[in-house]
Image (cartoon, rainbow, N blue to C red; front, side):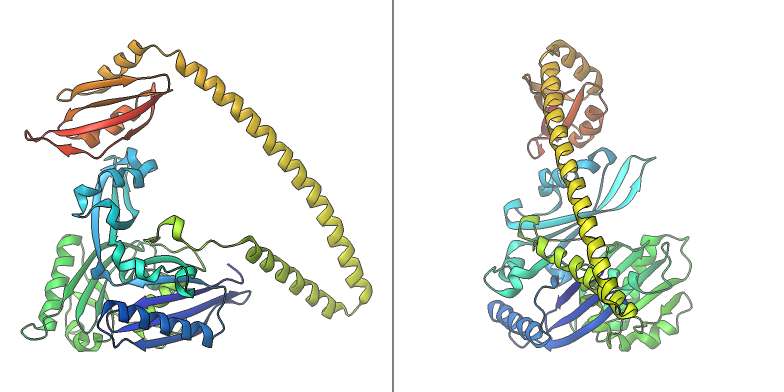
Length: 457
């Protein structure tokens, strides 16, 4: 996207890395970068230290309107890979919210979360979803709207997804490529499995500096990757990165079943692997990234104002006009161009007015259609709904309550698998907007208690 600017901030336990990217007609360029060590141990003092470094970086490079994307440590989050019915795809976040207690041992009120579909199997009628959850207490300290950092954050994700986005941006990376990422830090080992530019496996392991053998630990974790991939996977391609990556390079080079993929930063311009996640974070403000995770709630994200977009179009127009004026070196040409622009603006203004009138008519028609649909719904017999429910609900499901109004209805009962009811009821020609109204709970007999709401077509 032309004339965009973005800052990626990758926060680790002992340092914060920043990358400033700018997009222009010539392409994407690395405008600035920095790595600051973190010396404080107390969480509040460390947050203040991070803010200080970020403000210093923004002031030094005169960055005022760039989008800011924050990266947090992988071990601060909970990752789950979940299989769900294909029918929940349209209401994925709502379904996960209702069933969150199944996947994480934390109250919904204390977390932020985001999800992304990693794989879709239409034949098996299943989705594989990556769920990432973080406690609010780990993110809220950075969201103080009274300081420049908190007011400018557009997104928050983890180190792993940012690194996948960076490596996907590099040239000669096939869409169907499968490889492992081994990121070695001073205190942890982070491993990721990438398939088709998406994160299919992630693991974070603390390094035991006293009794542990780092090389043996790396080999053991890579063997887990092989089990995940299956026996059909041949040579495993590995990307090594991180501050301590050199310690295992020779070990992996000696293995015939491992292909060590060299890191090449010539296209991006960063001088070190340490800056790769920050670069991947900054890419989110410039272009669409494969891993589209954002742990920041929508209501707290920085909103791009219209003035910013108008300014970009005006600057683009002025640039084109100035180039034409310089090339032609003629005042008459400038006046003629100006007159043409005024004429086009008038035409566009008239078209915009027509569009607005058409939209107003469409809204009126939509209101009438909604009113007709509402009248039709009021005349659907209750017996018809009961007949349809009895046909769609399988054996082994018990209903102990049915409520029905002219707007819709709800059912309560017990089932072996409450999640399986949603696609069955959604397939009904009579019912729509089928969704859980409360979290699923389990009784003493192992049955799942559910409460499902629906509307009548």
